[in-house]
Image (cartoon, rainbow, N blue to C red; front, side, top):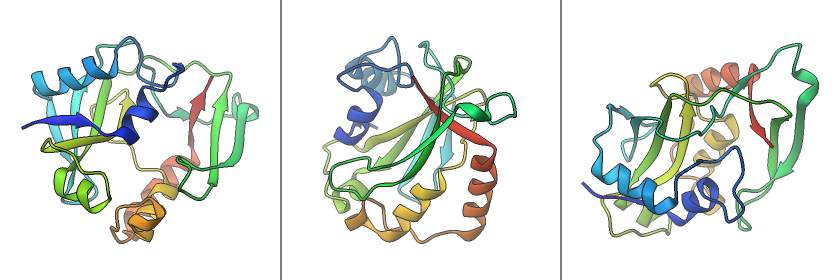
Length: 185
């Protein structure tokens, strides 16, 4: 089985100007090489048959991506309308500034199959393409952000995958993200 970083994931996980909330102490090439050489601790099913997550112990100083919201940090929450790419419509996002999450214990690369990436207009030569990565304290997936679930249901023309919305998964996601937020420098 072969794995490559998609251009979408490379830009988000390894931006030209490094940030504290991206993968640290590792180049994109080294990350890709490690995913191909090291067997995951376990493989988790994704939200659709073409998606899976590989669980790896974190070998970097990358910090957890989600921070619990509390009365002590709620005042550090920010929000704005942003698009992930120039082709997508902006959506409401929120994040913390001024918090220092713990170093993640696990990295969970999110993989899409070659066939799905071709459908989405991002063909690859490998069997699987990394489209994102979760940085977690537990070897388990955290729920997809609700807006990503909605974008996926809208289809590939809107930056999604075309997978219909699972109402129960959406409710679990909303419950998790009601009490958590991502963070930025």
